[in-house]
Picture 1 (cartoon, each protein chain N blue to C red):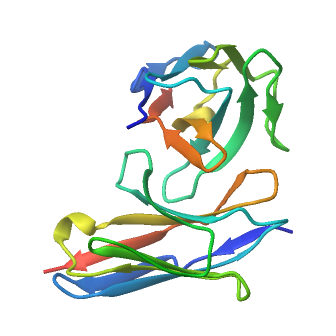
Picture 2 (cartoon, one colour):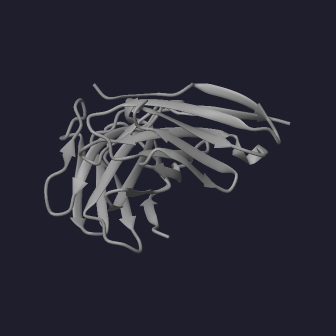
Length: 114
Length: 109
């Protein structure tokens, strides 16, 4: 089956620093990847759609200068949380689209900002 | 607007059957997905329905009525490991998933 990995699985950083999260499709090429954020006991919130070779499309209310997305290749997308604050602490999940109806999720990255 | 509704929490007994309902309103429709999510983990795919009717897959079945904007996930022979959140998501005309808030299923022995 299609596998998506994320790295790191968890990270603790200090307020004001930047953190980069990688999302890789291991056995398929994904022209489109998605980044989600999930707060405790809440559903997934789509942050942005990442398309290979072009700029990401951000959802309303998501700061594109704070959450930098780079989809450098067909198997890698990165999310960089810049100048992180405690309110950015969350569970960040990526998914990669294999086909219109097939989307596979990474295991998630738990970010804690102190 | 686009909207997905599902119950917040349900409780069932080990060995029993439980049905989790989901209603949706989307701009266009390209199918209805059910995902299972254990605490602290990413969602895992359970089912996909795009035509009306019941799709059975082992202990889990999923039903769709497009005319009613309604789906349900049926879990049979419940096991303790089925305790999780179950997410309903509808795919709109842009092939984007619109997510429900999830139903937390608690299984009691």
